[in-house]
Length: 139
Ligand SMILES: Cc1cc2nc3c(=O)[nH]c(=O)nc-3n(C[C@H](O)[C@H](O)[C@H](O)COP(=O)(O)OP(=O)(O)OC[C@H]3O[C@@H](n4cnc5c(N)ncnc54)[C@H](O)[C@@H]3O)c2cc1C
Image (cartoon, rainbow, N blue to C red; front, side):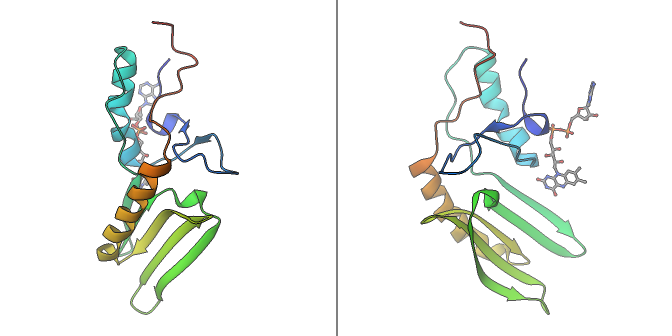
């Protein structure tokens, strides 16, 4: 059986100390981004390459919420901006010395810098992307 998207818990691409082996990410982008990996696995082909860093956006009550990376892995939160009157928020999430995620509300312009930094960290630390092959038949 091959599973992706919300029905799956993908191997944690950033298995830093104290983080779970699998993550239930639950973003639209995850379902789409993992499709080529799963297709390659089914066809017995090499993994097509690095997945983009997870991200989501959502519009709620006139506010644009955006996230990049894996904030749930953070053990330290840095608030860069918190402006309740203008409904603005910019937060980054860290584990040890690494930035693992960021979240903005009505501050989309700030996300690109976080994404770039997280992508750099990601490339440095991420495990190669591959499905859990334990249950796949031998080739
Ligand atoms: C209220 C809500 C708001 C969300 N907002 C956001 C957001 O703002 N941004 C974001 O990135 N993500 C958001 N998500 C998460 C996002 O919707 C999911 O991560 C994404 O849809 C997962 O895609 P999927 O294909 O894995 O599953 P789904 O999109 O759930 O697709 C599964 C499909 O399988 C069908 N199905 C189920 N059982 C069977 C069966 N037995 N036989 C045949 N078909 C079946 C279902 O009807 C469904 O069409 C939200 C989720 C919810 C519930």
